[in-house]
Length: 289
Ligand SMILES: Nc1ncnc2c1ncn2[C@@H]1O[C@H](COP(=O)(O)OP(=O)(O)O)[C@@H](O)[C@H]1O
Ligand SMILES: [Mg+2]
Image 1 (cartoon, rainbow, N blue to C red):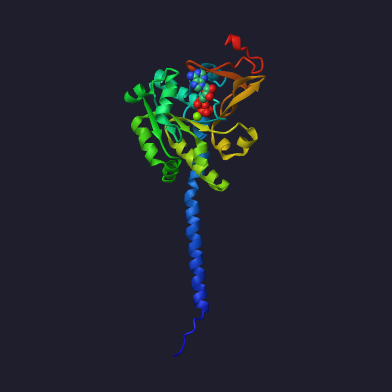
Image 2 (cartoon, rainbow, N blue to C red):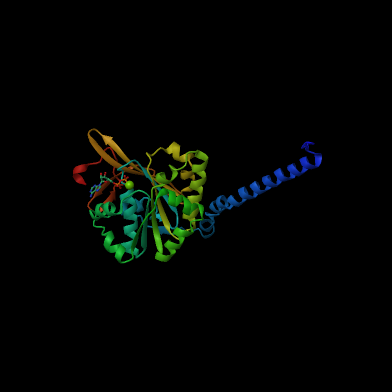
């Protein structure tokens, strides 16, 4: 029986080359498709530059607003970073309570890790009755697995976007970014997913506080995609002085804002966080609080 030898003719080779080229072209198109994500981010500063007016959103901490020209920029993404127990969750919830109680703005808390019942119980300590506010449609608590969030972000954020429009959410908290990024092993993937997330946030008609469960390190954030993408960065510190833990806050970055350079004390009390911008953290007099 004659065996037919398979030989690649020059024609075959050319065909293959064309096929390979086609794949390359398809890949290029795929890369191109992903690009507008980055482009959109660059466009963001335009309205500020053309009007020269920056609308502000109060933070819920009056003394903090006073050292940042009245509040966060409306519709900006504010990164709040600090170690465990530094007050990030309370800060975020206080920001929502400010909108709910003073401006009748629906607050939305998107949580990847908190247990809702526990969360409501702890917040009640500050007089924030989330069960009641929820029943009145003024507060929404959304629990997502970080994996679900990845899916939503990958699909363009439509699911959350729709929900936010439905409830008319004007103030959003995402708690926390770290639960989201930890899903990606490779740094390149983390960066890409963070860009996607921030791009989604930017498309919302809301001001967003994004919580990062990380010890503040300016060097880290300066070089990180989070630090670059966020419009503002706030650090919460737990400083040890002798045998006392002192809480402090720093506005590390706030685009378009002349803000204090000082790191100053904060306290968590019966009504939430209070800030003391005129005090020095190491001279803070606890008896006077
Ligand atoms: N009712 C309260 N009064 C005073 N301090 C409180 C109260 N509830 C919690 N805290 C303080 O706040 C900390 C928790 O703040 P939280 O915002 O949950 O921190 P983070 O989200 O940064 O981990 C607790 O460790 C405690 O020190
Ligand atoms: Mg927390």
